[in-house]
Length: 360
Image (cartoon, rainbow, N blue to C red; front, side, top):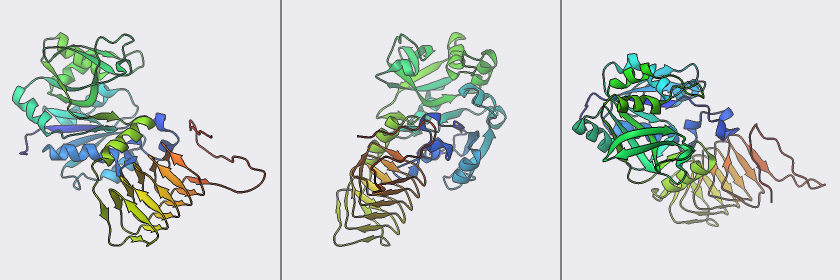
């Protein structure tokens, strides 16, 4: 797609408090889904839509985000980092990007969101219809957990943040397109009860002042990966697209079975094990006398030994040994889940804040 002068603003400043303790050590946007950081799916879609300049809002985890994304050249754009001292709201993030944006139209993308399908058609629509703002909407079963939008003939008439009694089931998805008028709107709004400048209030100001705000329903699925269930669901959905791949530098012994669509990366060892796809085993991980079931992503340098795991995400350097069965789980970096065998039998647990452990 030709360079159309549109810029992008990607928000990756949040702390991921709902995914603790995983995110004490890592930015939530860098948690891998099918062995690729969540953030990268959005950045790849932005690059594919022909956007060449991307501002990235960063907070406490900025060192990790910068290390992962670099100057943006790996994606095909130029990255500029915009520090947000405190998480003061989406509209505040837009406000502090003013200098970077100039008068360019821009696409705003929340870095922990995942969309099926590209951003190219949205950008093309924006240039064709020339609204002042274009927001993306999805039907959700629980609208009171989201910003909810009321439409009349495709035009937005009202936005309400987390309404107690929603008037529609259309929620704001984390993708927005704006022209420069959004900056004036943000200049006119006050912080909400939670002390944040809400993007919904800024868009409502545009609506009230007679600017054109268009709502577009998305095709396919969308996930905000802030919670474990959503993360695992996104992991399951993206696994549907994988294709069988076994790296030539991987070793799968004759006592092992690979079933279905399985990705085995370089340096992996699979010994006396069954891996049933769709599943991904990351570089230099070892699977020994174990079963890895569908919708499992094992990141790099991990070990699964004498254990069963499925529908789970295992991060780098984790060790799982002698565990009968793990499912629907997120195992963090360098976490060890092992059976001690010592008597008397008791669970011995060391976990971070806000963790959750379910024991049968």
